[in-house]
Image 1 (spheres, one colour):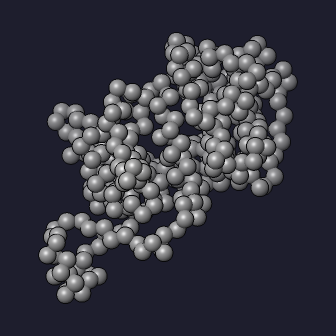
Image 2 (image 1 turned 120 degrees about the vertical axis):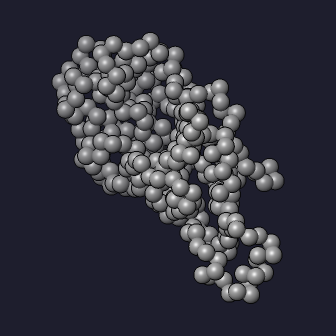
Image 3 (image 1 turned 30 degrees about the horizontal axis):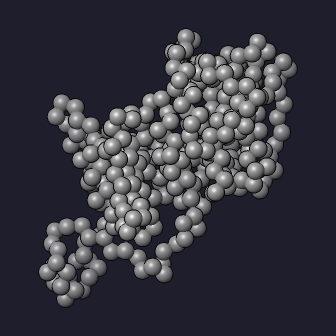
Length: 312
């Protein structure tokens, strides 16, 4: 969707007619129904939608999520069916939003609503960050038209499972387990705390780690751990399998610093792919800044996730 002046595309007689109804406003002209593509017909677009929807579903299970203000989420309905939604991922100051195919005309209204309800105010100045995919041209054009600027981008990696999956070998003394075998939230917390470089002394948010296991697609048998010889959880990977759409989404993946460069993360990526394929999955998705790690396993860049910001 591009924003163009009606004067450049409409004959004067038709423009005069339109101006009897609206002037000086943005008007969305939808495609004819026959021109709409089926959801997922474009595999890159499918990757964008899949990652966005997963984060919308599971964000509320994350310890950083602000439950107190989730009443500010916006839902647009028609005849009882949801056709649009806007929400934050962790807290106010950011938003993700989407619409069902055929309801793209709602996007300007959803953005305006997000600026009213989901922005933050500091020293009298509003700001809002919007997460979109680089294939979502309607949203990107809308954001650019409304004064937003892209400030960050990260790849969304996809591993097609019709390709051969490589093998990997555990270092001597280490073992591979799942949370169905052993689920120690303190060891999980320590691995994620250290693995994301927060320091050597983990906090005590064990309940937060248990809360993350309440997500819609959480499966302890798909949550993988490499256990060190002394019993410490050296590397951790959570695989969220969407049976309906036949794909897995990876988050989080972390390795304690002293166990890095041993191939542990690579081994878990490979094992996750094999288990997803065994369930009938067609591909695996992951958002990451560590692209070379995923490249080595056979992942491809499906699209990019972008952060656009505006202050006013």
